[in-house]
Amino acid sequence: MHFLRLSRRNAGDAEDLCQDVYVRVYEAAKREIPHPVKPYVFTVARNLLINHAKRDQIVSIDSMANLDELGIALDEPLPDRSIMARQELHRLEVALQQLPPRCREVVILSRIEGLSRREIAERMGIVESTVSAHLTDGMYALADHLYGTPAKPGDEK
Image (cartoon, rainbow, N blue to C red):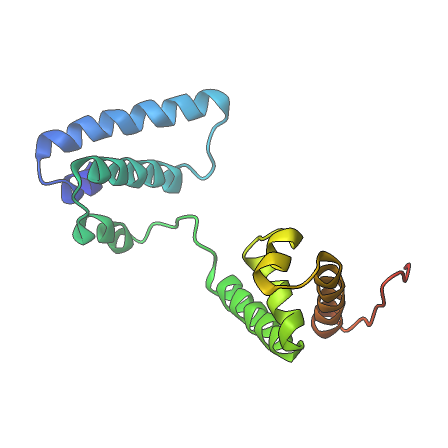
């Protein structure tokens, strides 16, 4: 209740939200008991607050910042995982920069932007077979750089 009271301007809203939190937690517990419970309850409360703020067309930074003050663990990765993820992204960025420009563009359009080979071919003004060749070469070069295992198309392990 303390979190909800701090997050809402109207004290009556906090009581209503608390009941909504109870209902959602109860419904989830009927399927499976959430573990750990405390972060789950605060996540439900935060999500309800976000939904109400969206509905009200008012997004208060203060209402969302209170969760940090309470020191509740959420679905955020641990600091070491964040560092490892940043390092992996940096390695991928370095590997992408080492690809030939056309090959890099095909890999980015395909794997990052999610375009089909036909869409890439149209955008770049090349035929689909060239897109396929660039994509194959690029993915093998990335695997070689990231994992240190040189592989060639058609090699079986």
